[in-house]
Image 1 (cartoon, helix red, strand yellow):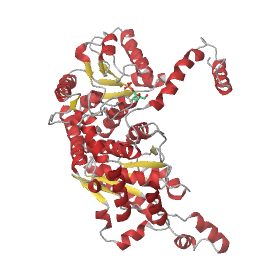
Image 2 (cartoon, protein in one colour):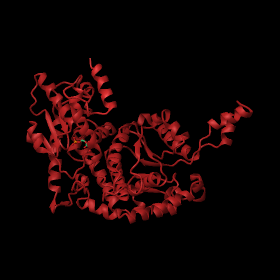
Image 3 (tube, protein in one colour):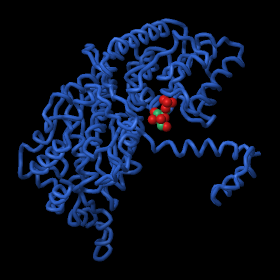
Image 4 (cartoon, protein in one colour):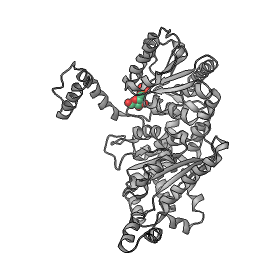
Length: 527
Ligand code: F6P
């Protein structure tokens, strides 16, 4: 299968994407997918009908639909940890039964949602001014990203997000907060993560040192409710979730509490409903008209078939500034793996490096490389048809124009002849030739664009669920377990051993020369 796809790619090596539009007037519509009021346009890529059919065949051959149905049905598709993968149950608002080991999980999911809503309403109506979410990875990135994304809907207490074990993070966050009106959310699936537990202890001391009672001031969100109780948090302030919610898929449940407090339960439900709408589409739409499937197949084509090692996510939506970081965890922690389900080496590369920044800022920073660098970076643009600031509609028009201009420029490029024309009046002869060559854009660089009317809670829910399912499809095709993360363990183990060496309580004698040199430098400069 992979060889066939590589053969198709080789046969298209010198073809210009632009020529596909010239040959087929209906290309834009044909190579796009609509879901509700969202449009995903992948026509500015090398995909043609034959390539698309081959990619869909690949998805069928890898039994994507069967695996998808197994996930929604609560089967234990996270095989290395023996767990179901059911973040979709957290947004299953109509409560259709979802069985794990024969028991319906929905009554508990909905009961927890109701408890969250009661607490959110209480806090929004009370005197709390600030909420500090302490968590890292999936217990931070989702709500932090969404809080920024939905700022026009934030009408509750201010939220802050502390993640890094670097004391600078919590120190800067607490600076200026009032311990009498601040509450803390300790968000940790395991309730053992060293960064989170260290920051939580510092927050606890901060409250106590100021003579304020810690009573009711701490909330725990965790699968490990026993540990949260041991930590001294009262049962009514503990919100649990099951091990079938992966950390990086957890913002739909209790881990989303800070967001719910900020935007209110009604808008949080709209966010869930958006995710649920994408779930329905993912389950029901034929593969070639299925937005997550096509987003994934375009990704597979660019990474595993054409060999482009990275992809840029470029939201022309400033409030999606944290989306690239969120997607880095979602995609790279899920599909950054070298072995397939049965433990054998992957047949092709694992998932790509994901990176990005909002436009237009990136244009004035790294787009130079995207346009003229020697490596191709497939780009994923996204933009809303309108912003939340009607008085600033002229800003939004410029934003959209820039977004569309970039995908057009990447595709068209600028030929040497056109570049000569640009400098003809300024230079002559060999100098004209030299100057012109610097102004050539190779073009033929692929991109996709996702457009939506407005970044509201439901749309954000659709976008996050779209990318979650994209990760699922890519993982299924690569035969990866997208739901474990063993690759984070080694560094954690070594950090635990190095701690006493940094503090001077243990000898670093058995460490390599570089580590010993670095430790010696630190010891010499600790002050
Ligand atoms: O170390 C990686 C990781 O396990 C992520 O998968 C997870 O989102 C993060 O740490 C935080 O874990 P927890 O929610 O258990 O504190």
